[in-house]
Image (cartoon, rainbow, N blue to C red):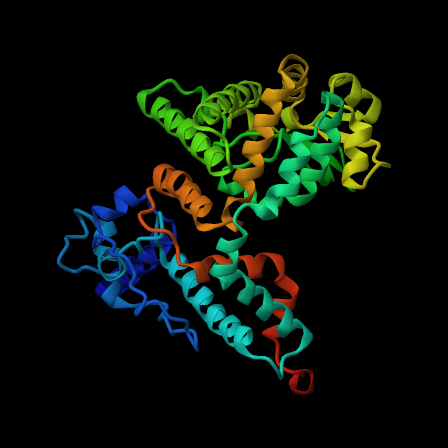
Length: 405
């Protein structure tokens, strides 16, 4: 009885600890080295696989639990589940997510190939998936989808045009893409509950404007951090060159981007400071906000995003906005345009031709996260459908109305 209880506890521990992804380097020391997935092995699922809640084969009984309880509990699972080459980490929930994505892949692939018998929702998600998977069309378009927005940057005549431009870009940006490394052009703007009155929702102006994951990447002075910044500048330069800039100009503009972002990062709160909610609550009227940033005209920004009537704002980091205003006032328009071009390219790289996608992957996934292989196209397209057409996709998974109870 005690032996059974011990095994049960070990299996329960395995479920809990594997559910928390480990860094690739730490996992590689305990798991089979990841191997690239071949096209033959990469196929959709027609049904979700059964995974038992408690599986004794997940254990490694060759290990003494008194010496290494983790490997005793989870060693078998880790041997059977090496980290995929297109992942930075792997856990039981990662596998569950991957299985679910493969199941959705099968559904979307079927709907994308059918020309009749589809509901309006099925046609929408099927056509979206088909367009995303049409890499020949994407390659043919190249940079052209962004050209009108690049032209708008080039057409900025003075700094008074900046708020309107930033507002228009914020309409295109998505909050859930910030995790890629981008935190918006200059800053982030959203809505949330008023921390001082939970019965109302107000506008939030947050720190942002960075191309690296957070402020520490700009402020740390250790050798690794300095090397990452060096690689970041090289990446920005290559992206600008892909967009048509001459190498010398791209290198100069990349250095400008790092300089501007470093100043914004220094003015941002540290991770520890952000834990204090009182440091993130500074409610202001529009007049107070305008006084805080005299060189950034909020009327033009709010008009551009379609909310000219907003009156109350939570400025989470006033010092950041003061620094942003200083940079606008003291930087040349040419430098600010270079910064805008970079962020436009960065935030849209996953949707452009393969040269942009590959360069974006090389830095943000390979260099920063240690991912060895770019995910197959279908994974990107399933994720985009799930993100952009959540409701039509969800409705398409429901039974037909006549069969619903």
